[in-house]
Amino acid sequence: MKLSLGPLQYFWPRERTLAFYREAAGWPLDVIYLGETVCSKRRELRTRDWIALATELAESGKQIVLSSLALIEAESELGGLLRLVENGRFLIEANDMSAVQLCRERGLSFVGGPTLNVYNHRALRLLREDGLCRLVLGVEQGRELVHELGELARADGDELPELEIIGWGRLPLAYSARCFTARALDIAKDDCGFRCIEHADGLALATREGQPFLVINGIQVLGREICDLGPELPELRAAGIGVLRLYPQTEGMAEVVSHFHSAVNSLEPPARLGAMNGYWLGRPGMSGLPDAGGSPI
Amino acid sequence: MQLVCPAGNLPALMAAVDNGADAVYAGFRDQTNARAFPGLNFSEDDLRRGIDYAHARGRLVYLALNTYPESTRLPEWERAVDRAAALGADAIIAAEMAVLDYAARRHPQLPRHLSVQGSATTQAALRYYHERFGIARAVLPRVLSVQQVERLCTASPVPLEVFAFGSLCIMVEGRCQLSSYVTGISPNRHGVCSPARFVRWDEHDDGTRTVRLNGVLMDRYAEGEAAGYPTVCKGRFDVGGEIFHALEEPTSLNTLELLPRLQQAGVVALKIEGRQRGAAYVGSVAKVWRQAIDSQARAPEHWTPRPEWQSALSAHAEGHQTTLGPYHRAWH
Image 1: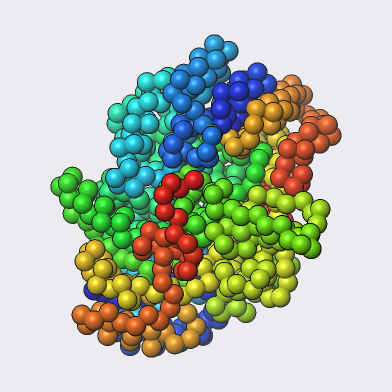
Image 2: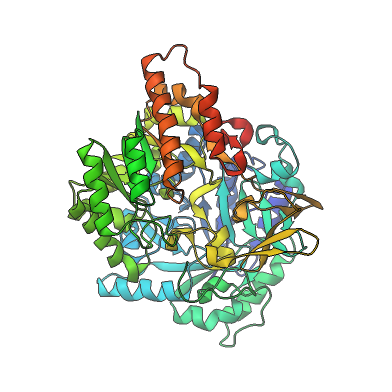
């Protein structure tokens, strides 16, 4: 199984970001995803800087993929996406249908990102016709869905593309036009002062009785828990997962990568580093909550 | 500009038609649509009667088939498309690619509208659905400012429908897993946000009330304080030691004052949210919007919303508050 470093979801100062990736170049990873996926106003690195960084990191022999924004609103953002797609060298992770279309129109293959909403084998086949070469499963897609996807694709005579799953990190749960960081700091989004940069791992949100719950990250909401599918590695292998994605956090990434590198090269499942990801078992994503069971409503 | 109103049952559909809806959107009584609440939606018989009622009055009925089926459940959605066609629905509203593809191949004459759940926010994304599935219209997610809607109207390959009034999803539709993270039941797959069976209200000795979703505290209310339905996005939480509506307050979208701009931009249809609401809501909201659209069309120069319209709409809003939401930059 390959290991990938997912795109940085937070906003870090330029030097910190560059230093992080220069270190990552030496980590035992197969794939590195680069780029801004959350907010187009985060410009410590601009599109050309990400592409330059990709060129530099490609020398390490790893596959470099450029990730696109999950939510595109303005024409200018679409222009930025076009520059990313037309980089001439690197594969794109398409995180919305705009990116799919721009790749499709140019005959470029792409990685389908976790926000594309691929829930069945027929949708997957349509996207393969469009050029999809790898699918990153959406956050709520677990064991059963992956199994069904494979069975029904094979019944149709299709092969599944390479499948990637979020193996470690915070789950991206929602996107909005609204900036929740700006709201929490009581400032306007249009005049936000890029304050996300002060919250290198996002802003923690707890319930009124102090239960850790979510993380606010600009226009994105993440689960607070660091999910960890390491102990489920034997199941992931059996399900045909080809790539395990680790999302960057500020602390201890080198150790996390090293932990998973040992894990994927061993038959013994590793100890759990984070929380159980309930979605894998068809339960609520947040760990420790009662299972829905029975009828959904 | 068409007025498209919600109907969760036959009386609501009739109320919408009687009060001036040009089109009504409805769903089957299953998980094929994004308002799969118990006791809501249409049996085939009711739908047949509803379509007859609307067609007899020159109005249209759209079928919402806008959830995301997994592989094994896809046939159920395909049958729903077949039923919509057989019943004589005027269009289906769908988001999922395999559903759109099936409809385009099997029932090419049945118009396909891209649902808000399809999360298409750019001309490129709209081109995709148009080229791939021949969509005749798209409903825009509630994330764009009015300026962005105006620009998209000129660049889009298909006519656009926008949300005009109703409960406000603040997340990009089709891209929100907050309810699913807590309950395991998802709006995308099961057509329901914050399912009622996971909601627990508790009254306490000190007069306060708490509301939980699958055990997770969404909010606590003082004695006599108005309480809303506990969706995660409208709960009060602790961020940096401050307790507030960290994502959004209980409020509804109301774009009445933007009517002239939306009209000018070339928006083809205004959508009213609320299939989970009753006939009284649908009837009175439809009536206000019908009057507003007609009076604006008659005298566009000096048109302003009448105060009685605004107060009628506010009375139906969540928390009796309304907002221009994402249409207004300051909301962002």
